[in-house]
Image (cartoon, rainbow, N blue to C red; front, side, top):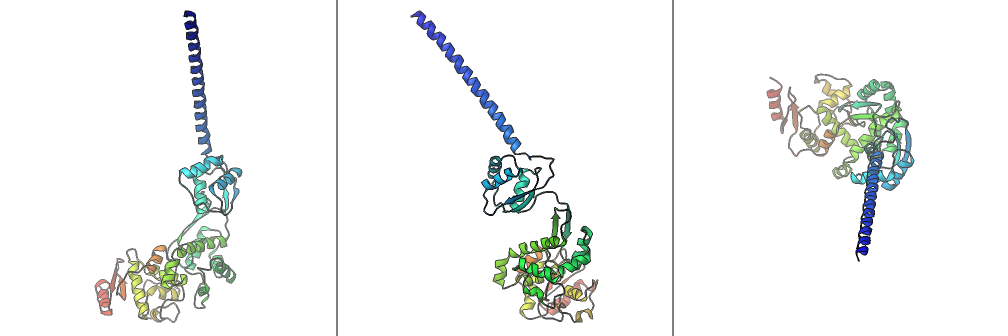
Length: 364
């Protein structure tokens, strides 16, 4: 009996040692796997090669899901692990990736790749940028392009007035650039169609056509956001850009564009000339600090003192604020307005009230 107890005791010690050893081994394996897994995942989340600059073309076909996109990126050498990229996008709740042809590098982070796929653009530092402010005419834009690119203002104007280029843009953006731009009274066909913004370019020497079309494409994107509202108002994109350009040119730093829009709409409704000075200046083709009475009589299709309704086309490029004001005017009975020397606007329902405002705010 005693011998059996000794044997069992000895066997128990052996079993405990074996269990302890197995447990230790398991813990070591788990620890090694865990640490290895951590560094593996950490490495997969980093750029393939932070120093790489070689551009790699990547094509994302239409209808590609995140699994397909992840595999394409791994096969192209843009990411280290397709599965990790897939889980990373799901963890960050990213989606709506766009099909298209991309130029990427192995130095891009996962966030940069995701941003590129969401916007449909290459997400990297631009080679150069061009800023087009609100309220510029095509001639003024041409000078801005000349300052920031290798192209001259004359080359710019030749392109944007080229019949072939205009026909191409009408075919490319048929909902925006319609037959209305072919009105013989329009000074420059694409006046007001190049959206004010800061444009980033990622090539050293993009073609002039690429530069112009980038601006036109943004106008198309902005205007088409309001397609249903335009249809409701029975207003064409050309009429919208024309109307908005008047607001842009009448605007001061403190102006109420929605109320100015209401004045214009009220005048149009009763067939009263818009009589806005910026159209006179555009008709004259020159900047003047003060519009004279003789200027108001100039015989020109843009002069809203002598024509009825809107001018034949925009007189400048309008920003989004002016576009939205043209679509959402305030509800007023105003027919007149003026800006005082500090840029504040004063509105009137009658001509007598307007004269009082002139005496009060301008004849001091």
